[in-house]
Length: 152
Image (cartoon, rainbow, N blue to C red; front, top):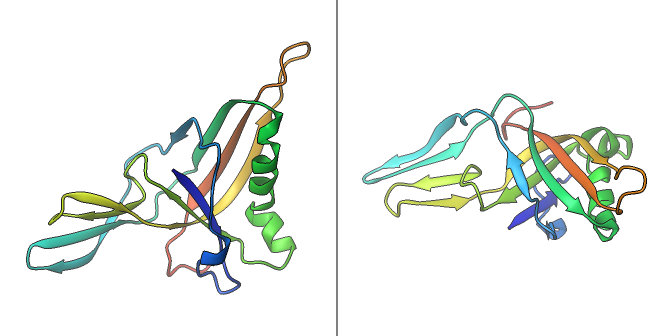
């Protein structure tokens, strides 16, 4: 499952805007390994959380029909520069439970618990079908992870 939630003016997550992205991306590209920071170290449990990763990451939707347009335009409006132009926080929050990259690893339970990650959406684009072909598109969402305590 892949989700998006908007940010409040102070940059915190607005849970009321949480929504699942349907359809889900067909693939994701995160590049090099993530850096981790220890959140808690007590007794047996060590929790780690994804820290800032340099470089753009992306979610890609391949072979989507025009019915995907409502999701595409929602993502398009969440780009940092478009949100700033409307007087909103440039941030949004993303959540996914496919890769195990966005979350907290709990050594005691040996599970990754998905977390919301604060990001700036830098690009949303679509490759339109070639002339004469079926109306099928490939769309992508590019984003940068932000540290929760960092001011941009």
